Amino acid sequence: MCFCIMIRVVDESDNAIRTVMVELRVNLNQMLAIEHEEFIANLNRKSIKLHHLNWLSQMRARSEEEISKLSVRVQHLQKLYESQELIIKNLVGSKSSNTGQLERELDRVRSYRDTLVSGELSWKDATLFAQDSADYSRTAYKSWHSLRTEEDESIRFRQALKTRDSMHQAALCVRMAQTMLPGVQFPYCTSREVFAILQVIEYLFTDLQVSERFGHALEVYKSFNKRATALTQWLKQTTDETIHKDVEEVDERINDLANTLSQERIMNRSFARPIQNGMTY
Image 1 (cartoon, rainbow, N blue to C red):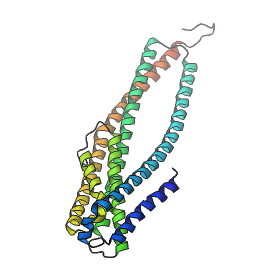
Image 2 (image 1 turned 90 degrees about the vertical axis):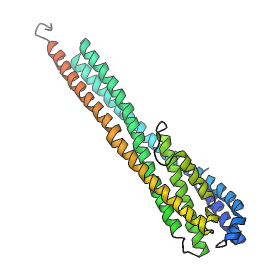
Image 3 (image 1 turned 180 degrees about the vertical axis):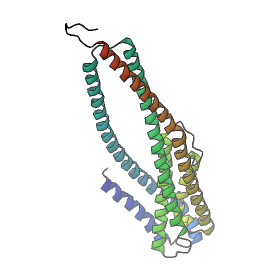
Image 4 (image 1 turned 30 degrees about the vertical axis):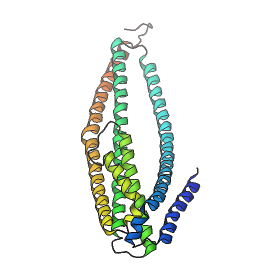
């Protein structure tokens, strides 16, 4: 389904919720809101699923674009490595057993570095998703807070919709961050917390009409924002103080091996320099 059609379907689903709420006259009516909460929640669940599908489609398109760009860079880097090796072989000719051993060790450490860098990128991507979650949840909290004294029905629905969509995206971003690091247990915004926040937004449109529920939802959104912010800080700190340091240590090892290998090749070349009668010494 193309994005334009998907967006239209999502908008129609949201408009259906608004139409039903107007017809049932639940705005600022606590009793009617409670009476019809499951019916409105079911409509909202359908709309949330459509938003989720649209969001995943956007993430997929972005990922495919990034993969395409990375593939081109990898191919270019591979050609540079091949050109470098060809030049070295032409300069050195035959190599000693020690040179071969150094080359194998250098290849092994480079391969290990690639694995570490891949892991570091995953941590950085997870940090970005966590930051997005903090931003979205902050927007959700502000939108919901603005409804404390608002009575206009159109504005109330629009702000509630903004709260729902922002909070939903905040939850999805945390899930994406966890997907980037499947073996890591997050100290904040656990899967249970994400599940809880998704349940809260299902009843958002009727909770808006009940003062106690409105206040409870406000505290939930505020708490999630604080924990998403804490998660972002934890991920960034772990990346900078642990993951990146590991990469730096391996980079130093690679530089040492590369320098040693370069000196070894220079020595081999000097020992294999031809003399006037065509022999080498």
